[in-house]
Length: 289
Ligand code: GRG
Image 1 (spheres, rainbow, N blue to C red):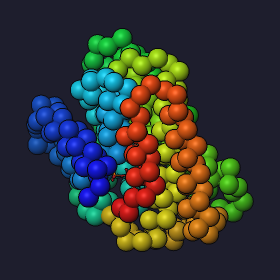
Image 2: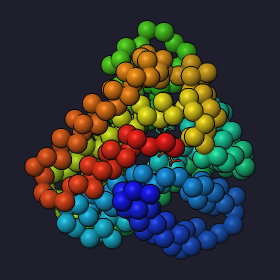
Image 3: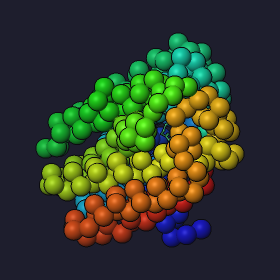
Image 4: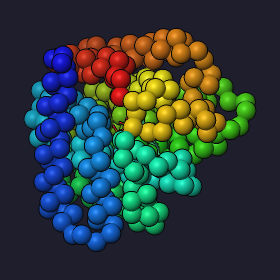
């Protein structure tokens, strides 16, 4: 296990502890929607976005505890997006993280509601803090997740499924919106939580967005293996516009590398201690699950 794996495990465990506490306090009921919310939140994700958020707060010399509400809010939005993405009206997936998807266990209606609740509760968690940057953080998350961000990316992705004529620009736009915006937001919220100046927040947002795009290309490469916890090769079979539909695996790997290098350059010149973030970028690129 590398030093960085240990670092990541540390942030995952900090986050999972905070999540358990939040669940105990806010989702203690056992009604269907609450059970569906807990199932989706605890199904065992990599916690990449909260880890990036907490790591960013630390890299800027701040107290990562201050970024916990932001990390929770981001993971809530991410979890809602996966629950909705798996529904029959979207990707119609039976498996997520190697387990039955939320709608397979709780039914479509409760899964839809669980996603709605997670999205709304994310903003409750963020807005319940009283930091100078609270309003800015709410806006940052809304803009990354909403109709000019992840939702638009998802809509374009559905539009281009099984349809000819998309360009590389279309592909990059879809994934910058769908995956990049939330990773960019994770780094930006980590910076805002420790009151970093706007120029730093913007650089970190661009860093995260680049990582998101590289992450998606890696995800497409992994879709062809059996490691993702989703049905193998499903994206290609369903006519999804993937990087591998547009280029050979070697070229896709090269593209991910150069996008990731450009993202890492965003870190140059901002404060100190950004090496964990650099390692994070390299880890994302080389991940195998
Ligand atoms: C339904 C509005 C709406 C959006 C859905 C995130 C998303 C948009 C769809 C999920 C499908 C997908 C492959 C998205 C690309 C981003 C991605 C690789 C998500 C999976 O993220 P991981 O690997 O998941 O961080 P874990 O399970 O580790 O949390």
